[in-house]
Length: 639
Image (cartoon, rainbow, N blue to C red; front, top):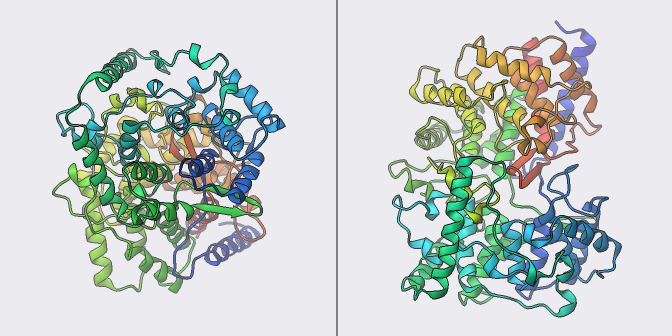
C-alpha cells in the first residue's frame, strides 16, 4: 500500500492530467496536436512559392523569423532539437532566406555559408536537396540519380524495382517526381540569387559522382551500391540516346495515377513532400493553377501551416486519428469511466473515419477487405496499421455505443489488420511484405527509408491488439509475431523503435504486446528487456533517448529524461510485472515532479520518427497523454 500522502498526490496529478487532456478536445470529439518537424519543410514551402510564381512576402518574412530562431549557434540547422548540424537542412534554410531577400552579408547567412562549405557544399547534400537545387539551375540534373518515367510501366513482381515494391510514402513522392525528372525544368535565377558561394570549389570542377562506399560498410551493401550506380550510369546513357518509345505511355500512366489520388480529400499521400511534388508535376502536364486538382493540393498544404506570434512554419501532416485513439486509451487507463460522454463522442468520430475502400495495399493482399484507419483526417489510399490497432483497442474499451456499429467496425478492422500480417510474422505500417531491403542501395534512396518492412514496434502493437480482443499466445498470428520479435530483439534486451525514439519506444511496444497476449513474463528474453530498461534509468528517475541512437546504437537508451520516454519505460515495466520497487518509484516521482501547473507535461526534445537518420518529429500531445496513461496504470496496480 502507498502512503496516504503519495496516494493523494498521485490522484491529484491524474485528475489534473485528465482535466487538461479533456480541455484540449475538439468540439466534434477528436484530438489533434501539433506535429513539429525540422526546418526543411518550411524552407521547401518558401522555395515552392518561387517555383510556382506565388510568392507571398509577408508569409516569407514570418518563415524567415522562424528559421532565424531555429538556427544553431554554429550557424547551421539540425534535424532534431539538440542535434548536430545537418548539411541538407542548412542548405535549404540558407537558400530560402536568400530567396526571401535576406542579404548574403547578413551574419546568419555568413556563418551558415561557412558551415556549408566546411561540410562539402551541395555535392555532399542528400538527393532531395540536389533535386530542389536542380529545379533552380543550381545543380546539374546529370548529377541527380536517374528515375525514368518508364518505371511506371514495370510490372510486378518480375522486376527488381517497381513503384509497388517501395513504401507508400516513397511511391507518393516518386510518381510526381518521375514527371518532374522527365521534363527536368529549370527556373533560372538572376546572378544575385545564385548559390555559387556555397561550393568549396567551382562547380564546373566538382565531381558529381555518387559515393561507392556505403555507410556503414558491408560487402553486401558495397555490391548492391556499385550495382545500382552502374545501372544509373546505363540509364543516363539510355535516356540521352534512346528513342524511348514508351515514354509518353509512361507519363500518361503517371498522370492517371496522380489524378486518381488527387481527386480524394487529404492531399497526395497525406504528406507534404508528395503534395508539393504533385503541384509541380501537374503544372508541367499543363494543368492551370486554378484547376481543382492543383488548388486542392495548395489548400491541403496551407492547412499544415502553424502560425505562432510573428512566425510561420509548416507541419509534414496532421495526426488526428493517432492522437485521438491514444488520448482515449490514456483517459480510460487513468480511470475515466468507459461510458463517459466525451469518450463516446471521440469514439464515434473515429468510427466515422474507418476506411472502407481499397488502396494500394490491396495489390499485395487482393483478397483482404478494407477496414483500417489512416493517420490523417483523410488518406483513404493509405490506411495505417498502427492507427488501426490503437483505434480497435479504444473501440473494445469504450462502452455505451451502438453495439451493432461497434461490432461491424471491429470485425472489418481486425480482418484487415490480420490480413496484413507479413510472411515473416511481423506487421509493417502501410503495406505487407514490402521488404526488398536491397532497394535501399539505389542512388535515389540515400535516405535509407525507401521501404516499409515489418518492425518490432508495430508487431508489438499487433500482439497488444490481439490480446485486448481476447486472443491468446497459442493463436497462429500471435505465435508468428512472437517468433518475429524473438528474432529481432537486440542481444542486450531492447527492441528497435521505427516510429518513436527509439529503443525505449520499441521495448514499450513489445512488452505491452507480449503481456497482453499472455506470454510467460518469466521468459529470459522478457527479463533481459526489463534489465535493460532498469539499467538505463537516469539519475533524476526518468528515461530519455536521443535521436542519435539511430546513427549510433551506442546511444540506445541514452539521453536527457523526457516525460514521454519515461512513461514508455514505466508502461513497459508495468506490463512485465514490475509495479513496485525503487526503479518504478523514482520513475513515478519524475513524472509527478515534472507535471506543469496546467496539468500537462512537456517534452523538450523530439519524441517521434519519420525516417530514421534523416527526418524526426515532435508530437506535442505525447507529453500530455503518455504520462497520464503511465500514472493511471501505476495507480491501478497499487489498488
